[in-house]
Length: 79
Image (cartoon, rainbow, N blue to C red; front, side, top):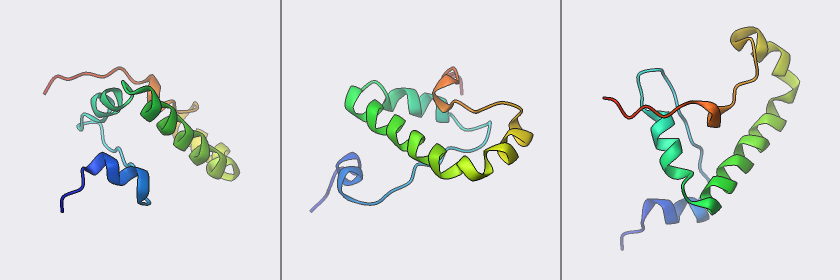
């Protein structure tokens, strides 16, 4: 039996990883956030991750210079 990948996300533990400047992750994220319930879930995951990272938030700021908003990046579908 084949299970659709997005259906598996609702029932199995998972992590989303977006990395690198050469990958089109903002486009993938923008595509996923067109579904309001998925957008809410993704934003909930980001909020949970930020809570976990609170103890090292100052250290992270030294690397970025500002808080990082993953939803604030402009999707660029250029290849």
